[in-house]
Amino acid sequence: MKILHLLDHSLPLHSGYSFRTLAILREQHALGWQTLHLTTPKQGAGEQLEEEASGLRFLRTPSPAGVGLIQQMRLTAQRLREVCEREQPDLVHAHSPVLNALPALWVRRGLNIPVVYEMRASWEDAAVDHGSTKEGSLRYQVSRALESFALKRADQVTTICEGLRGDIAVRGVSAERITVIPNAVDAQLFQFGVEPDAALRSRLGLDGATVLGFAGSFYGYEGLHLLLDAVAGMHARHAKLRVLLVGGGPQEEALRAQVQRLGLQELVIFTGRVPHAEVQRYYELIDVLAYPRLPIRLTELVTPLKPLEAMAQGRMFVASDVGGHRELIRDGETGFLFRAGDVSALEQALEKVLAQREQWPRIRQQARHFVEKERTWASSVARYREVYRRALAARGHDVQPVLS
Image 1 (cartoon, rainbow, N blue to C red):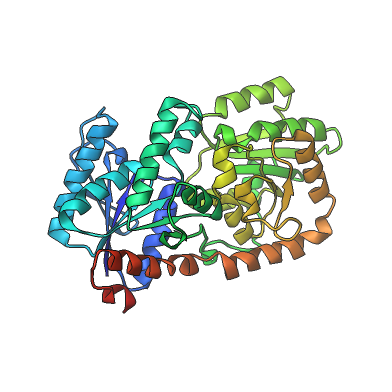
Image 2 (cartoon, helix red, strand yellow):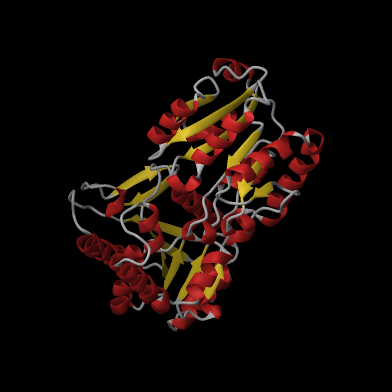
């Protein structure tokens, strides 16, 4: 079985998108499948034809700087066609955004190669998240129409969670053509119950402190300003309270200004971005992680990876009750939920967790057990077998490669 994955971007660029892709590819190799990996001009301008990262060979789409979206798709289609004609894959697996799905469908017309489209997030909602449009605008409506067009015409559709499955279904895609391949973790990559790095803790000024924190990208929808507001109300009751913010992003400047405004300079530590391989050392310093995502369409529909990674490491955490979190978290059993967008509810949830330290070992074990049994990449990726079989059958191709 030879699958050509068409990707927006890949390693060595670091993102949740790249790490999900890497996990999928590793598990598909474990199943004995051969994979090819082609990125679009979104990887970056240049004439490079291929690149190796994490032991994988990624084919690139040469592109000049500053080309528009239509030209990007044309370049992608041209490169995809030439790779398909040379490598003869059994099918094309196009991953979000729709800018990848459309070129795959164009190439299918001439080569009759099955196309699986994986929608990790809808293009229109991603544009709202990035601030390039508003929900209901003309651009939003056009983007949604293009997304729906691609979803209806792909041979099979996959997505990452039940929230997105529902959004795809209301666009008129039949249930038998939609499969959820949920986000997961390789629990063996995360150490459980490890003692914090004493030297790092001391260097960051956290000796003897109760540490709240977050690790990831500082986007507006993450709601980190709510965490700072909650801490402003808590620190009088917790003399040793500290906040560790690991990472960076568009909201970093605003968060730093908020810290100054609230007089929390002695309590909040910004580490800046750290290498991915080092993130667990910082996780281990945090007593309670906070995921205060705001209630917007994106967070209601899409499940994040961070809570799963926290569970794999046995970290205590609180998370807002947006739909994406409710799909992953069993309140009081593997983590704690609070009313999204409500600072008082977040403060109360943090206080509740801190007051129940004797319960932490039980919850940590339950969380680890959950990811080991229900959210492994091996079980998620195994679902592609039936997806690919259906896609091949839809085009009249031999399904034996995926069955063997």
